[in-house]
Amino acid sequence: MPMFVDDSPPGQCIFCRLIAGEIPAARVFEDERTIAFMDIGQVNPGHVLVASRRHAATLFELSAAEAAAVMQTAQRVALAVRAAFDPPGLTLLQANGREGDQTVFHFHMHVVPRHGDDGIALSWPRKNPPPALLEDYAGLLRGAIESLREA
Image 1 (cartoon, rainbow, N blue to C red):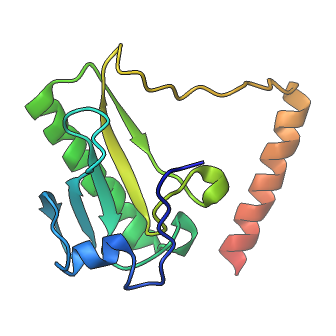
Image 2: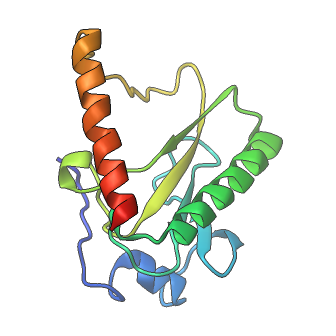
Image 3: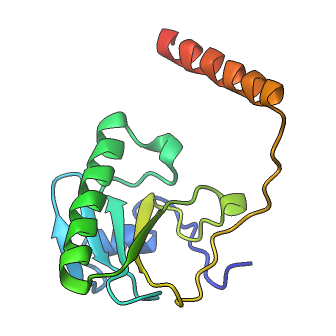
């Protein structure tokens, strides 16, 4: 269970307050749709959060333009992290919902420089379903994508 969870109403969450300038942040980059700032819980030096400016609790609430803007800013920040800190690896992490381990309910992505001995474990139990079941799952998703296009 996370030690800190912020599920405040829109405009009152910690990131909305940070964007509004009500609380301090070490800002890295800003544009009309995104803001990038240092995570106060640095996992490794150079750990940055990229957030949407508009309050959207999860990925599901972002517009396509906002989602694209966050990824473009994350790439820009990742390139800067590589230039400034030269980590041998990098992880982008984005969580949605409590079950997805989201702790601040304002859409954001972590840009985390990685090192072989940094103690971060992103492994999960593999289930390895048979190919026929994977094809069934893919069919369900293709159908859902087609339905979303028609809506």
